[in-house]
Image 1: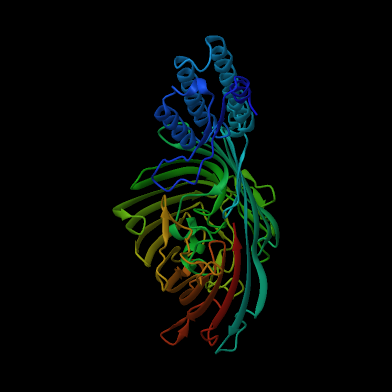
Image 2: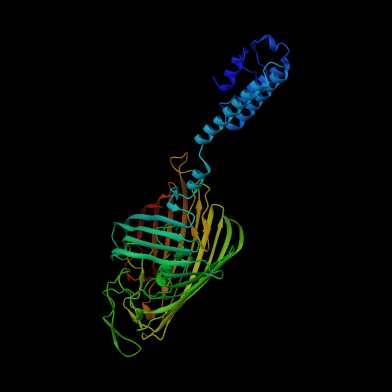
Length: 534
C-alpha cells in the first residue's frame, strides 16, 4: 500500500478498483465503489475518465515516462475530491506530496536499473573485435589485424619422353602469417612471414614496411613489399585463378632479373576511382645457386664472388643492384564492381652494380615441375629494362586477363640475342554466379553466395590459360608454351580446393625447344591444392 492509498483510507473513504480485461481498441473499466456519504456529490464521470487513463498508462510500475502520466491522473483525482469537499485542503496537500514522492521513487528505481550515460560512453571506448573472415581489433585511433594462409599441393607427373621433368610430390607451398595495422588514421604497417616457403626452403620475411597516407599527392611506403609490375604478380596468391602464376610473369619478376616481385625500397602510390599510379626505387634481392659462376669482374675491375644459396631472410648487399619500377592502370569502363575493363602498363629498369645477373629460370606453372626455360648460368650484364602491357575484364561471372612482357639486357658480355619476351591469355567462369572482384589495379577475393554448411554448395569456377615464354639465343635460347585448365571449389570465403591440369608444348619444327632438351617430350602435370586463408 503506497502513501496515497493510506491517506484515502484514513479519511474514511474506500475506493476499490477492479479492472476487467480490456478488449483491443477500447477503454472500459468495471468498478466497485464504496464511497463515504461525503462523496455523493463526486462527479462519477470524472472518476471513470481517470480510471480509464490510469489503466492505459499501466500504473507506477511502468517505465518512468508512463509512471509520471499515471501520477498526473492521480493528482487530478485528489484535486477533484478537494473541490467537491470530500477531503480538506490539508489532506489534499498531504495526498499530493505523497503522490509526487511515489513518482520520484519509481523514476529513481528505473534510472538505476538502466545503463546510464556514463556506462554507454565507457562502452564506446572499448576495442571492437571482428572475427568474420579475419581477426581484427579496432578502436578510435588504432587497428590491428592477424591473418595468414596455408597452401598444400600434391602434384602427379606424366611424361611421354625419356627425360626427367620432375617427380610426383607433395609439399606445403606456403604457410604464412602476417600482422598488420593502422595507427592514428594515416600510418599503416605490415609484417608477413612465410614459415615454409617452397622457394626459400625455410622461413622467410615476405613483407616488412610502413606506409604513410597523410600526404594528399601520394602514399609513401618504406620497406620491403612488391614492386609495382604485372597484374598477375600483384594479385595475391590467395586470389589467383590457377595454382601458380603464368610462366612469363614469374620469369620477369624473379629475383635474379629484379624488375618486379618483393624488394626493399621506397614506393609512391596514388589511387582514384578509375586509375592507379605507382612507382619507386628498389634494391636487388639476388640469389644464386650451384650453376652460377664463382666470381665476376665488376665495373671497377675487381673480382666479386657470387653468394650462393641465400634466401630472403639473409642480409642483402647494396651492390647487388638497384633500379626503378613504375605502373599505371585505368578503367575505361567501370559500370559496377562486376562490370569493368582494366588497362595497364608497367616499366622497370635494373642496374647490376657488379655486372652480375644470377641464373634465371622458371617452371611451367607447377611448383615442382622441371624448368621450362633456363639461362643455364649466370651472365654478366650492366642492366636490364622491361615493359609490360595489361588488359583485363570482369563481366558478371566471366573474367579474363592478358599480359605481354618484353625485356633486354644491355652491355652484356655474352654474344647473341639477349632479349626475352612472353605473354599469357586466360579466362574463367563461375558456374554458380559469383564474380571476380577488383580493387586498385588487381584482382582480389571472391565472395561466395551460398557457402557449404549455410544452405549451399559453395562456388564453382572453371578456367583456361595459355602462356608462351622465349629467351634469346644469347641467354639460353629456350622457348615453350603451357596450357593450363582449372577447376576451383570455394567452400566458403576462407577455404578452397584447386585442381589444375598442366600441359607443356615444346615441339617446334620437330625439335624440343624447352630447357629439358631433345626427345624429352611434352610432360603433363596434375596438381591439387588445399588452401585456407584469413
